[in-house]
Length: 400
Ligand SMILES: Cc1cc2nc3c(=O)[nH]c(=O)nc-3n(C[C@H](O)[C@H](O)[C@H](O)COP(=O)(O)OP(=O)(O)OC[C@H]3O[C@@H](n4cnc5c(N)ncnc54)[C@H](O)[C@@H]3O)c2cc1C
Image 1 (cartoon, rainbow, N blue to C red):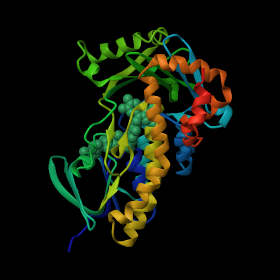
Image 2: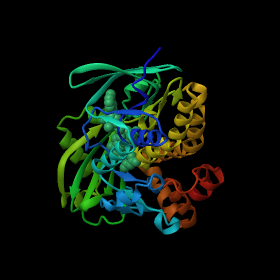
Image 3: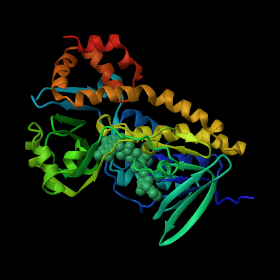
Image 4: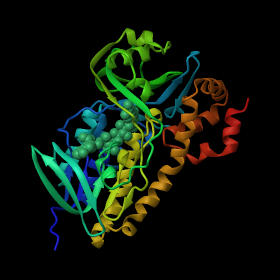
């Protein structure tokens, strides 16, 4: 008979893993969470959470703590094109909703502590090398302090991010990942003119994101083609600064600010999988799929994905079988919850790949306030994404 080390093993202690583990432990299940890092840790991310993500934090009972840590209130995003034209994607004015800006250093440690407090056996510096899963049980091979060991559980949760070992070991990675972009981020202090709104500056060679965070810090990200970043002639630092310098509306403000800390990078960022659940496993957060940071989806999707996964996984564990059939409701919930927004994100990709197209859209969106406010609500995850996919809506929004 198989002996189990826990009922569920969660690989990854980012937002997706910590929240899934917490929900399972709160439902009375024995959970081990493994992360190769030691927390707090930095994560290459623009660190802006949509109003939809803030709503999930409230649902999980941690928004007050996030705010008490000094999270910056984010009322919207200003999108700027090279001509200087801009559109304010305002979700606070028309929708009364706001996002938050908080370093992942603080957010992820908070969520992991919450998992620990819920009874999860959290093991840091535990590097998972491979995973096997089946309807009756799964196994996780890991190394911890130079020692290799195998742990067994009924359910393996892959929450180990965009380069997921769980997804790869189980043969779930989709063949090609697109778009192939690299993201570089750094913290700055004293960026002039940054207040309640984040900013996205789109140029032909890439785009930059600015997000105000706690303690007067701002996150500055530069996203460009992975091949261009890989084939650069100079250092990563030179590539980052040169990319920002070419965004003429932004650079004078950054030149007046002070960079604090190193540049962190990830590339290529996209990750697609063929299935997010099956016999003995499920994937949450970036491990299940990630497109591009422009729409600021990632953390919100990780939190909401965990909120969807927790009850389905708990019911499967209670029933004693974590079969593909028992986990199917999670797949359905993901389709219903993320499917349309994913399509909107693909649509947005078309515009950011082509700043001239964005230059065409912006004055029209500024003229059509009500329609543009609906679109802002979709971007902030406070208006159903289906509204932006209605061809009549798009035709009215973008008509000459
Ligand atoms: C440049 C950039 C900017 C972004 N900006 C934003 C933004 O502004 N807003 C937003 O919402 N999202 C943004 N994202 C996306 C966001 O960072 C991710 O979607 C989010 O972190 C997903 O959370 P997660 O819990 O799924 O994975 P992660 O946060 O990546 O956590 C995965 C965890 O798994 C651990 N791990 C990985 N491999 C192993 C292993 N083999 N063994 C053990 N542990 C392992 C890691 O140490 C990590 O702690 C951005 C991403 C990038 C790259």
